[in-house]
Image 1 (cartoon, chains in turn blue, orange):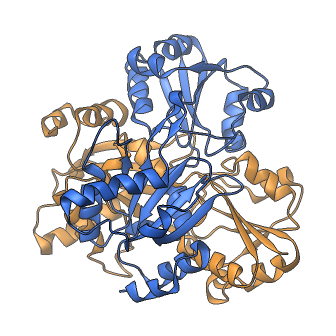
Image 2 (cartoon, chains in turn red, purple):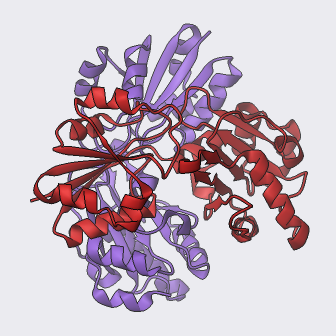
Image 3 (tube, each protein chain N blue to C red):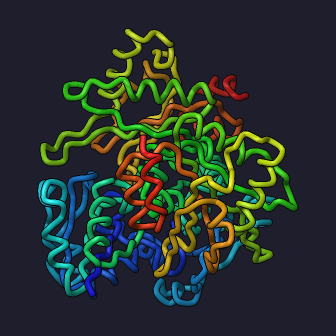
Length: 266
Length: 266
């Protein structure tokens, strides 16, 4: 009976995979890898192939989405196939869809988790994870002008919750939205909506390269962070909601926020 | 200059650590381990010590919380110390507090992420991660009778969002709240609040042993799941909000939900 094991690569490079994930890869009949749903800046396919003792076949967005993962499903019919994916598997809906297809075809599926940008960014921000509301992806402004991120922010703020904003990536075109672009795009929306949710004096946290050796975490006001150099991608943003005093302390000590944010503590 | 590297152990056992995490552990001057903030059912300290080529010193809740991690801070003054923690570091606020203490003492800190129960459970549920609202921990009913989980559920439902409920653990006493206990406790609150949010016919997803070789994911109505045998801990619960048709499909195919939940798709 066939089997697909979805193995998370974790963050940033080829050392993010877990020991169990490497073991599953070593013992698989065939290994596929998908590298377009998320950016792993320092990932070396060769290094991981060497560690696993076999070659990986890279699958494209077209193969996974338009062709419903046929190439993976076919290979999985009579043995164990591993699909390596960035971050934690099943966070991208593409992989949930493939998993459903597999189970419908009588192919068993198993998950080896990896670290996810969601919990990494929550943790690096120093804010309490159970105070985050709905998260949202900020799209490229030229493509899909969307009010959604602003609306999610309004909704979370009303409830005093933090908002985690992932920034869009187009891996095939090597385009990664930056903190600068994301804040500019939100300020544009603010001009029309005028709900005073993204103002020059709004507190925000920018995070870049979570999971690398040199992640950057910087808290401050929009007017300061919009021109702050966060370096190489990927970037993320967190808009804090109500602050507990320990959260304010974390933003000041760990992310260089101005001391006067203590006044925001409720 | 001293340094503390917080290394995530990921989920379930001693194979959840990343290759980078193991490498950091191998090269550390001293290694501490904390095993009370989360349950790793099949974790073998000995196995990981063998893989790392050194012994680990286990730290207690008292040492990390009441004594503010003095034992770790002292060791980190003149070299690299690793603190191994379950899941993804900094998700437990204890570790954020220790990180702040370290930085205030001039000790650098670095994070090696691990897989987190938050994204693991979101992924295993088959529901879209960006449709989860605030998450919540359901406490033991005998200790801190709390309306919070019910209130979080009411709030998320109003917005059509899913709710992830972690179930409390008391690692020192080897007590782990079960799906049965958690649902019973919510039904008790329902009796007083009468907002019809946790009824026998409410759809819910129970998840046990995320990250293991035999996780269980079962979707159904409260009346059915309350007596369903989820086996060994840890357990978690997800209350779905509005369902996309692909989410309903995932619950049916991957979690055995009744076909008639398709009617809930908006």
